[in-house]
Amino acid sequence: MPKSWGPWINVSQIAEGGMGHVFKVRHSETGQFGALKRLKNPNRRERFKQEVQAVRLLDHPGIARLIDANLDEEPFYAVYEYEPGGSLADIVPEELLRIPLSQRLVWCEQICSALEAAHRKSLVHRDIKPDNILISEDRKSARLCDFGLVYFDEGERQTEAMEQVGSRFYMAPESEDGRADEVGTALDLYSLGKVLYYVVRGRIYAREKHRQPENDLAKILNDPHLEAISQIIDDVVTDDPKNRISNAVTLRMIIEMARKNIEDRRPVVGVPATYNCVFCGVGQYKEICISGETHNHGYGEGNIGNEQMVYLECNNCGNCQRFKLKYGGPKWFPDAESRLRK
Image 1 (cartoon, rainbow, N blue to C red):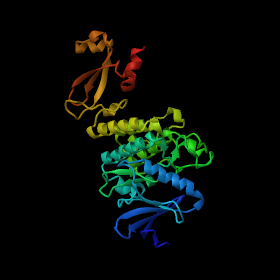
Image 2: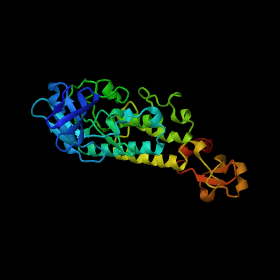
Image 3: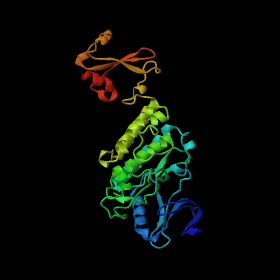
Image 4: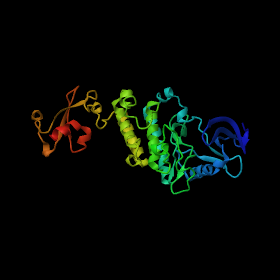
C-alpha cells in the first residue's frame, strides 16, 4: 500500500470502487485531512479527468469539494474534502432508523439541491446510491460525492453505449438494460427515489416493487402518513423515463411538502386514516353523506351555491366539516365522487 501521493500521506484505506481506491490522507505541511481517490486503471484516465472537470464546475454546499488533483503523470489521483461521518451506506440500519425521520428526509432534500446544481450544468451523476452520499458527523447534513460515472450532456461519451452504469439496486432500468445512451436528469431522480425509500425503511427493494405488500411503507411501518412518501416514489421509480419527475427542483419541493405533512400529521391525499379532526385532534373524519343524498338535510345546508360537497364527521367528538368536491374530489374522496356520477 503506498505511503504517500505527492504531499498527501496515507492514513488508512476508506473504500474501493470500480474506478479506484479511496484513502483517508493528511497533507504533509498543513495537516489537512482529505479523501484521496487513486485511479486503478490508467486506461480510465480520460473518464477520471472528466470526473475532476465536473466537480470543478460545481460549487455547492451539497457536493463534496475538490481540494487537489494530479492528472499529468502517474499516479493519477484526486483529493476531496474528508467527511468523518462517513457515507449513508456506513450507517447501520439500526442507527439509521433512530435518527428522526424528518432529518432523514432533509438529507434527500439536500441531495435534490445538489442535483439541481449539477443538472443546471448539464451534468448527470448516474450513480446515486447510499455509498455516494456523505453524512456529516452530527447527522445534520448530506453531500453528494463520486462523480466517477458523470455524463456531460452534449459532451464526449466516456462509456460504451451498451455498458451497464451504476449500482444494480439503485440504477434506472435504462442503465440496467444497457441503454446508457438514454441519459437524462430523470435517471438521477429514479435513483434518488430509491434512496428516499432506503432512508425511510433502512433497506432497499428490487426494481419498481415498492407497492408490493412486503415493501409498502405505510403498512410495514404502521403509519398511514408514510403513504405520502410512497406517492412520491410512484412518480420517480418507474420504468419509463417519460413518466418520471425529471426536475430536481420539483422533487425537492414535493419531498419538503411530504416531510411537513408527516411532521404535522396533516391529511395525506387519498388516505382517510390521516384525515384527523381539527377540533379534538384525536378522532378521524368519516364521510357521512354527499350533496343530494336525502339524509344530508339534517345539516340544513343542501347544496350551498349549487356546489357538490362531501360532509364529514369526527368519530370522536362529532365535529363536522364540509369539503367542496371540485377541489381534488376524485383524489381525496373517490367514493363520494363515484356516487355523484351515478
